[in-house]
Image 1 (cartoon, rainbow, N blue to C red):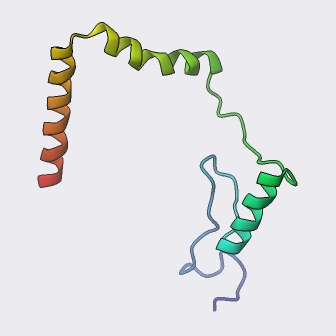
Image 2 (cartoon, rainbow, N blue to C red):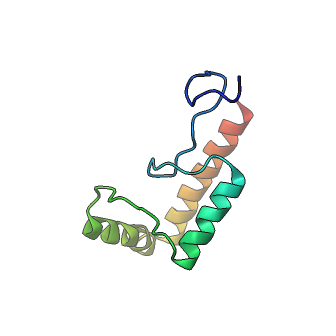
Length: 93
C-alpha cells in the first residue's frame, strides 16, 4: 500500500524535517531542486528564530578561545589526555 495517503501506512517513514523542524522534500530530486532554487534566489530559505540571544551567542563563541589562552600548556595537555582516555574507554564498551 505504498500509494496510500501520508501517515496511513505505519511502515512508511514520515516526511523528513530540516534542522529547525521545517518540512523538506522527501525525495532526492525534489530536495536538489529546492536547494538550487534557494541558491539562485528563486525562493527564500525559511529559517526561524531559534529563540537564543544573539549577544550571548557571540560571547559564547569567544569563551573557548579565552579559556584556552588563560590555561597553561600543561593544563591543556592534561585535559586532552583525560578526554582521550574517556573516548577510548567508551569505544571499548
